[in-house]
Length: 207
DNA sequence: TGCCAGGCCCTCTTTAGGGCCTT
Image (cartoon, rainbow, N blue to C red; front, side):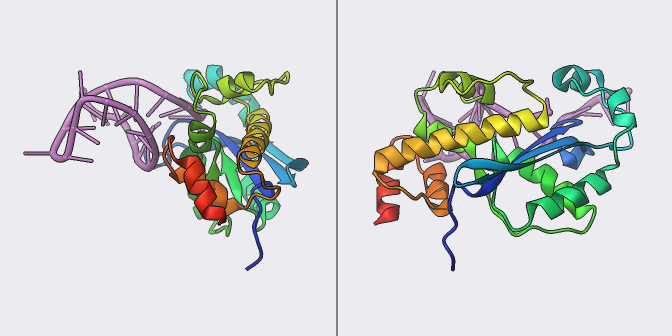
């Protein structure tokens, strides 16, 4: 099987009506960045109309208003376009379990599957950047001086910041292991290791 | 009316509890 590199993937972020599709929550915006050799080569961004109003907390938290969603394409149309964009790429998100459950939920509604696996920048940074004050996306972006102007809690900007964080994490791993190429499975191995022994596990993985 | 996530991780742990992260 062809090696899958950790710097070739699609970074994904959803804004949603709430925390759980199991409670009827839906996606309202998707943002994504395709990385090739760690460089952004393509982006995807769209608001989507979930067919019901979002509450005032979500309007304030994201800056996405009901008025903005009125003119947006319906979820099915946007998710079909994203599915085409994604192709067979692996995926990355900050707290991937959250974005994965919304991706799975929205794609199941249009009978689409995807082949890629998810990496998680939150789990990885808890190992590799264990000295960070906390592991919220905004904090890590400041901690590693990755800052750019933009609006956190909008999907494309968060995906772009997650992409920068991931490249920074890969740089740290590369420096610690003295290797050039980092495969996707190595990063999965690190994210599943403990804070104390991730480097040991990573070295075992490449030997 | 009342309810309201879930997976990960640490520790004063494993017969559990609570904080962290995502919207």
